Length: 81
Image (cartoon, rainbow, N blue to C red):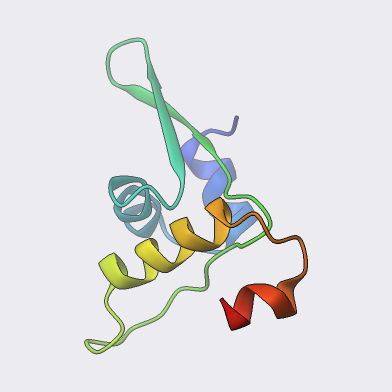
């Protein structure tokens, strides 16, 4: 579990992007002490920050959820499914 600043440094993103990713469940957020949050980094599929109106964050978040919930261990098999 990392603070906001630590998670941003590790992922190479800004705090606003981290909060947005937490809203879409790309990064898990755990709130404690009422208003302070700790962040859990995503598993093996770390997303890259993108700026595109055709590849929206909601669509990328759904794709990441599908990859993380896949039972296949081979990345080539995941691409086929």
